Image (cartoon, rainbow, N blue to C red; front, side, top):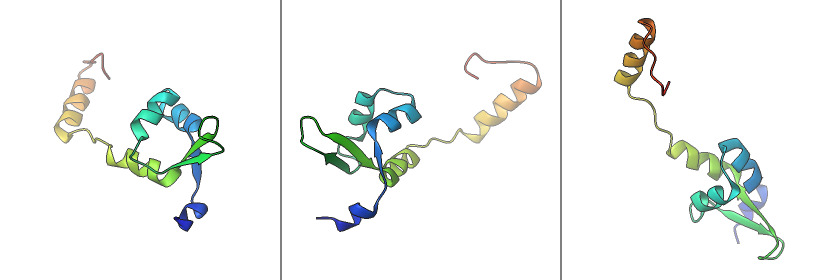
Amino acid sequence: MDTDILQKKLISTRIIAERWGVSRSTVTRLLEGKVTKVLLGDCDHGAVRYVESEVEDYIRERLVQPREDRRELLRDRRQHGIHLGTE
């Protein structure tokens, strides 16, 4: 058993869903097999918690930075009063 898990901060599916703006089932589907899941109580009616630092790492790994030339294009368009519907 990983005794370090006892020292780690846990976070609920509900809190993650609220932060991400998605449903709890989406959180479960996205995190399944990718981060450590802790079951509190019995399997059918217990609460599910995830290791918060692993959830944060999951998000960091999926962070996509806008390409610099795209940022410059958007900045130029704004300066000239041209607005895209996606901005």
